[in-house]
Image (cartoon, rainbow, N blue to C red; front, side, top):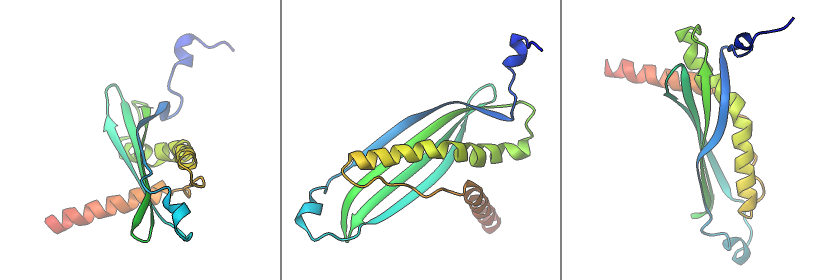
Length: 158
């Protein structure tokens, strides 16, 4: 059965990721040579990941993953990596408002994360360290936790 051009351009799922891109990337490596001048010790690595959404026009949204990585040995900073990885998302007009937030803050970040993870791995490797492979993130739990924190703040204020 042949489809018309109009039918094939329809949005077939509740959302579609048009594009993904690096919005901002910073890598600071101020104390790289320290690993050659001191006894080797295990660095402390902290990773912080946040998802945010900006509404655009015509049912489009920009979903951004903010990833911040810091590595230290004792009190000395080895490196800092900050990545803003974004996606241009189209949402079907018939999507229910009560699930829109979940789509944008759970499903889209889940699909975008492997690409952002690869960038972090590549940059840390290019910076002279073993590739940093961030553990998979449960964006649903992150979303629920933030929502509960927001409700607690509203209840405390009211």
